[in-house]
Length: 142
Image (cartoon, rainbow, N blue to C red; front, side, top):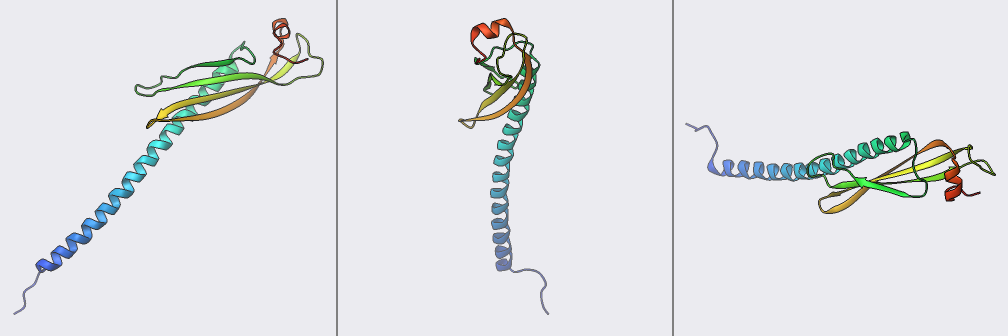
């Protein structure tokens, strides 16, 4: 009469193979979680940068050729900030007060992730009308 079932050796081999498979899956899961965390940080920065750029583009009056900056504290534990600069991009020759020009607005959002400083940069363009103060400050080349 034959006995049915598994021997102790067969059980040890099956358990060893299962342990190797589980360790491999855990290593893949760890790598996936690290990548997801990195992408989440970049997505957050892209959202914050585009929001800040829209805010700057909608501002009625921004100084030209002056670095603007500030902190971004959207969430507890998120350390970061923003920097922006408005520069003249294009205008007609012989510009004077009352002339419409095109300004470039560059905005960079930075944050610390795992002890490494990372940044994300966006830029946009807006039209503006020159004021006499712009002409006196030298913000627009003649």
